[in-house]
Image 1 (cartoon, rainbow, N blue to C red):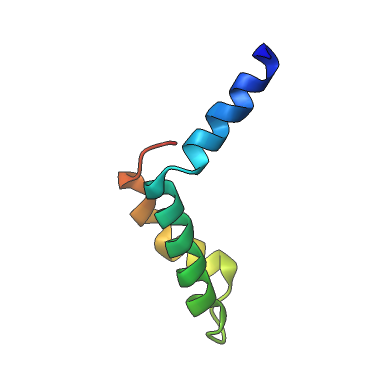
Image 2 (image 1 turned 120 degrees about the horizontal axis):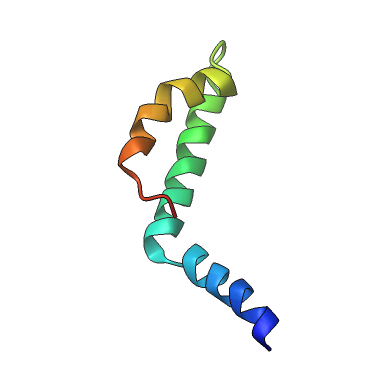
Length: 58
């Protein structure tokens, strides 16, 4: 069962409450920005990119 350990470690990282909160926040912001006319995904990523510099790499 050694081959299954990385998968279990990955689920441990994904199911961390802080990471789930970031996912929920990302979906919420994406939905709010997505309904605005003239502001597409590329512009949204460019605007929100500086917010990611303080987040841990995980």
